[in-house]
Length: 237
Image (cartoon, rainbow, N blue to C red; front, side, top):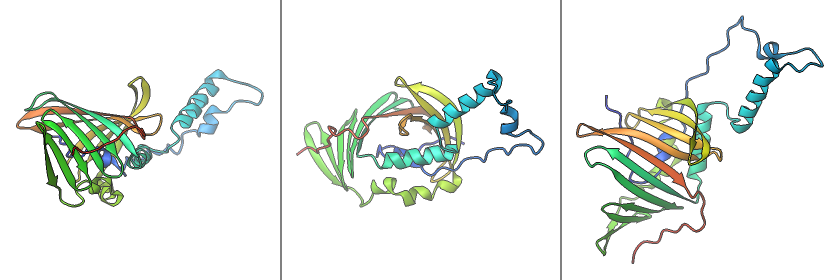
């Protein structure tokens, strides 16, 4: 079965496909395995490096990532993302029938988008799209609620039962540490998306692959300028 991704045109709540994800339950400890406290305890007044080092590492990790599971991490990140006043997204597509493509997207709450694409710049305000085509502005009405559904928690929650999330360690993205997760979804269509969550709890990058006309395209989206008050989206007049 080909891997596919959700439509990315609305930049959109591109992250909507990951909200309220479910995760695999942690493996329970064996009944005859020693407890963590017993395994790391030391006599009073001693400071065994072998015993204290793992506990210090665990404590540091918990302080950086206090959430209990990959599901909690993704859920919290998506809720925070959906509450943003503004952000910038840079989308790079490689491979596929159209070759390399770069799109730049700006979002300003509650309903303004600017999408700079090779074919031209498009603006969306509410349920109206403005297309700047070679100096001419076309004003196109959109079905009511087309974009709003991607920021609707109820819509997103409908897919939670079929989602799984797998923690895959951490990497450096744009010079900062980020926790990496693989999110698999079967609704509304099968998709595999890798997400990186920054130290601020917001998604800094997502990556997915899709197949069209027998060719595979890789899409990478990086996010920045979270809640930037200078970011504006004004449609052409």
